[in-house]
Length: 561
Image 1 (tube, rainbow, N blue to C red):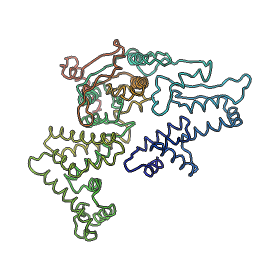
Image 2 (cartoon, rainbow, N blue to C red):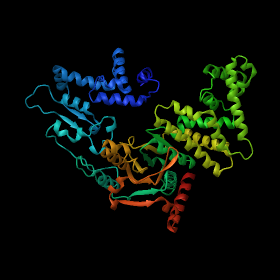
Image 3 (cartoon, rainbow, N blue to C red):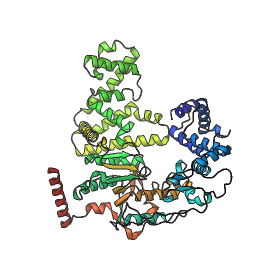
Image 4 (tube, rainbow, N blue to C red):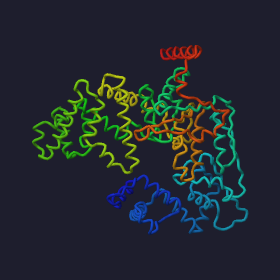
């Protein structure tokens, strides 16, 4: 990745941008399609030029990457019959797991290792593959489901063993998955079943918007932990895109429910969120050195890293804050006039907004918003993003963080200091109690969830444009989207809830949504359609109230010990 970044920097024109991760994936996909070099026409594009230069750099360094290991192995075996026959004799039996995730090059490698270069009397390729075509969800990174669907074309007359008994899920969950996936025209017929019984029906819960979705799910998890005695580790929330986790995380924090992120970064660990909180901390307390050092040159203000380092050392020697060091005449006398002017603009900025914040009846959210605008932070953030999509995502995160503060301000009189204290306390609890042990509710992307299982699953955002993704309709990959949902459904062991929203916040604005077309493909006899607003407004029956009270008392007694 480091080499690709350097090549992009050297190759790209002033107005050209290419995400190193995108470039890496394009190069990997190209190599797994058997391409060693780019054509002259390809080199006119930035991606093609980066690919060509990357290959040249690897050759100069006498190095290969992981994809080259496959490519070169196939090249050696195809061009040197004696080598191919030697390795064929060495490996009499081959087994490949997760065969549905293999690409064309990997299939070619297996074929060469299994078949000699010349006919041998009585020879039969001893190849065993294990896989499920219904779980082929990595087409975007080169996997070809045709490898398992057309296995007989490469290895004639194989023995096919179907493992249809499922030891994970209830029949309600499995029948829902079976009914969905049979809509894929190209697949190997199979029907999962379980001896664990039918279990609860799969719930499909309609939400007014994603805020209600987050509140509903987190409140229900909190209640079920009490009424059912379930641990937080029993619950998982699955989503298509990392951006969907933000509201879930916020609500889990408000309820003091521990959680862990798998396959993505926590919303509160993202750069722009940390920057915003650092600015807020400096308004409340300029002696917060950690926050001050984070924003002192964000955006760049003409205060060099050497000046910052010297100020930090001065503050340590004189037992004062970095902010006080920046205003200390002894320290300032060591600096150039231009640097002093830059420092003055920065300290005056913080002083001025601190005064605004402490003015009676001031709107703290408005003050913070004005500070961010005055610093030009948003414009600087956009400039540092590699793609317009990244810029929109990061800007949306800032907007959503400000909305969280406004919601807090509406329910509390503690202002910005109270909001930051609440955030800090939650973070400390998570760091001390949960992160080290990896405990709590699991938040995970659908792709990362493959191979895992949880007693209780909430699969959110079952809407057109998310599942199936808009891009799949243009690229003709709706079948893979259906397989992705199938994988998500079959992660659940005991209960499963699928949610969709009529409105969802996108790039800071509420956008209307439609329920996923896949919902119509689910079996009505195994589905319970619900509406979150009706559930939340329904009166609690006397029996349910007694049950919840009894569960709460039992939980208290267990805790007491």
